[in-house]
Each structure stands twice: as C-alpha cells, then as structure tokens.
Length: 140
Image 1 (tube, rainbow, N blue to C red):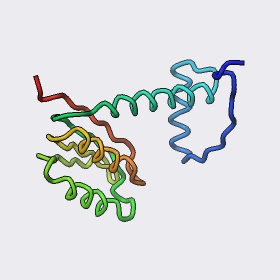
Image 2 (cartoon, one colour):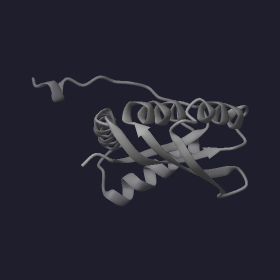
Image 3 (cartoon, helix red, strand yellow):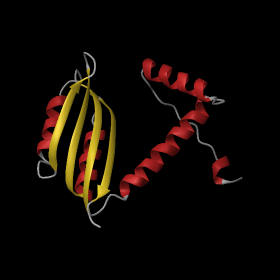
C-alpha cells in the first residue's frame, strides 16, 4: 500500500452556503465525490503555502483580502494588525462589495518574511474569507 492509499477519515463542520457553493463547483468540474474535491483543495492549499514560504528578501506586493465586516471585533483586529506593520504597508484600498462583505487591497514593500507574516495574520482571522498574496522581488 502506498502513502496515497493510506486514507484517513475526518469530519468537518461547514456553513451550508459554503458547502452548497463547493458542491456546485464539484459538479461543474466533474468530480466523482466530495472527498476527491476536498483532496484537490487541500493539495492546492499545500502548494500555495509552499509558494508563500519562498517569499524572501526585499519584495513589492499586493495583499487582497475579502472579509465579513459584520464579524464581531474583526475590523478592530484587522486595523490593529495593519498598524503593527505600518513600516511595510504603503497604501490600502477598501471597497464595500455587499452589505456585509468588504474587499481590501493592501500595497506592501519590505522584507518578504514580514510581508508573509502580515498576510498569514490576516488570513487566520475568523470572518476573513480569503487572503491572496502576490509579490515580486525588487532586486535585479
């Protein structure tokens, strides 16, 4: 038996709307089961994490974040996190997408490790739907 054949069963709790969206995507993409879709999503997450791990040196970048502004305490937490990184945050743009969802774009410049830490802190907050980090090296 190979490592991929050694399966573990897990149980997860998801909001119904998130599961419904996931099921629609699985159906559209032709997945044979939720399990296969979840495995694919985990592989994608692992790949993204590895890619983020390589953010080193002086970088210029963009953090794109979508969050629920009705989540209790989230706005204060996001603001506090950003104030802790004011030396690398150069500008931000905030947009109200719906009555309770916001899109924020944060321009950053500085040490890649600090930029990555900022993105990970934002990503870890309850009520943050997604965080995407894109950077380029400023060194030739």
